[in-house]
Length: 191
Image (cartoon, rainbow, N blue to C red; front, side, top):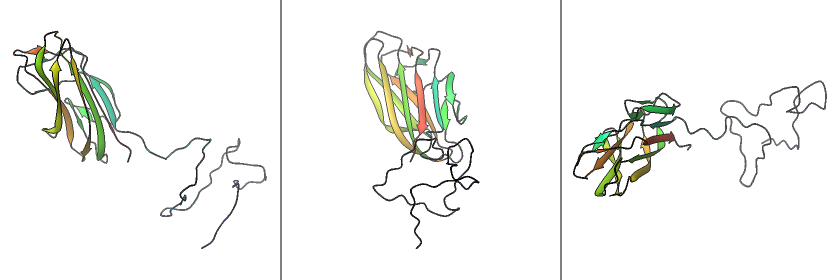
């Protein structure tokens, strides 16, 4: 095995003072397709420039909210409706659900919350995440107390075409309206 030892690598040029990052731009390539560049344990990579192609991004991601009240019937699990998209990086949110786009299978983090527009107290309100039409346990339940809200967050492993929705439940004894400030957000985890 050949071994190269050096403290500085400069680009090839007509002058010995040209360095990477100078006003002249050049590219230094390490290896070719199929090669592995090994950084041994204990080595620190110090970057003072711009790093591209490392790590990854939490995309696709989305954030939606409602901007109108929604009636939630008594003792009925009801799908929440989202009227406003704050953002949707892959155009993957439609018909009140997020659907995993082609090539984006993996683990996703989801968060949602909703709130009733009533000061009445009652025994139970719930929020559910549904994957492909089936509840993903656990659902989160709580006691409603003076305009109370409820939240859920969960990591779900998804395949291309899988979809996630949010459902609500309440048992106040009559129909209740949401307050109109509910949110549903999600993003793909970097693995």
